[in-house]
Image 1: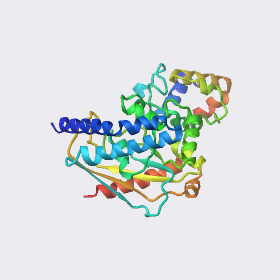
Image 2 (image 1 turned 45 degrees about the horizontal axis):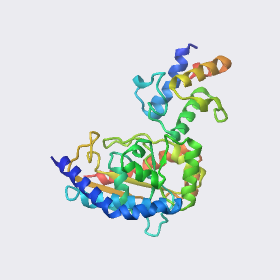
Image 3 (image 1 turned 90 degrees about the vertical axis):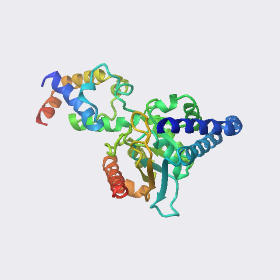
Image 4 (image 1 turned 135 degrees about the vertical axis):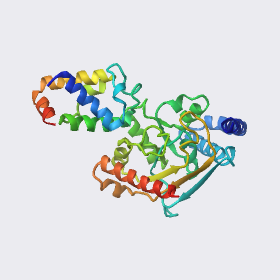
Length: 93
Length: 241
């Protein structure tokens, strides 16, 4: 699985859950300030990401530090690199 | 031309109201926080009523009705569809001093931002999920009704956009009843460029979804879809020719 596939999978959550224009999904965009999400939207973001990657993110402290979409991409790129089975799950989808 | 007139009228009534409420507002600032917030929410409620019932009349007429039983409890989370920037004013038609969940920018507006902050409105872009949840819990615990627009941002059309799950998850967790409400006819009052048209707006309060019933959906996704379906059905009824 290529890094761009993982990035596309993360971005797809924002398009599906929040109807954000894919052209706006740039790595430097801040999730709250630029993409218009608020703290209550985190529920939908987490559900979407959990469903896409087939993992539980509830207890993940690293996610709390994320500010930009690029941070989120980097988080999942690292997660998939450390857990190759995630890539396999994602490919099946 | 109509927009200019309505903005002038709203500005006039805003300053007239400010003159009248300046002294009570100053006294409210001296009260303990909880009382002060309650008093400011009433000041905002009355202001909203002046704007929607007087300042824009007769070009914009607002009708309010309720299909909920008259003895229904007012506590809980009120969920509205969101077509226009006039919605936060129109919810005053329910006659309840509600605490609104807002996404940042209303808190930064001159004058309005001051009142929103004094009311204790919850800024969901500034507070994280746990903080927002704790503030909502505190408000519900103090019997303060909560107003929420789960579409997140105004649609600017007759469309009902996707609902966000957050407020439904919190309502389920806090065992709070949900009051679906709909507002129709204001998609161009004002439009997304803040221009006004004359028209008739209908605000309707629908029967409550009791806390136990809300919990029976099992997850926030199913609950939000149910509430969205109810609101969509009511909108369709109200917009039937």
